[in-house]
Image (tube, rainbow, N blue to C red):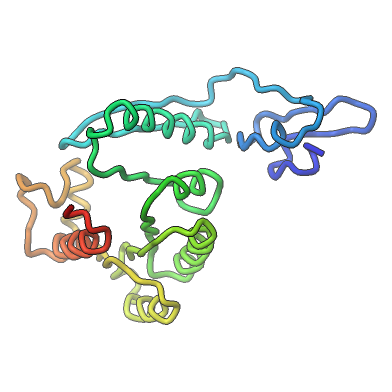
Length: 227
């Protein structure tokens, strides 16, 4: 039963023999633990990654790193969420807003974080692949019954912006804004200085800065964070 239901085929079952776990392809979803009627599989101890904390610009960061060649990123995500929940439980006034940043796609890690979010912001790009990936993640968001609005990154890429935005509108996908390709955004990233930091020297009239300003204003209206 466990082998038949394992999505990553991390269990090899041969008749009249013990099941053989293949730990290198295990995703850590724990489905086998939950459905096995005889408790034939037990968890083991193994280092698969690390978690860190850091602070910058009055923001606390909870970071996770997966060990090379390991596949069970869900375990790292669960650990990070546990660390965050303990802080919120012991110091509920510590954070005004918590941002959960996920890897691309619609896998179990993303589902875990979406399920714990109040609002979801899928980020896409104006390409055919970007659109397909966006539609896929929206299916998951709808399944989890969460409210969402998208952001279109690198919107000036390939000159496809207007057609792409029209396609999103036709599918009733609302956006918070779009971010063009912009040298100041690249400089901000490379220098490790937030583009909109009040002490930064980035051009406040630049296309990149203006796009973030619009997204910020729309985000405030949508989430009513002013309270």
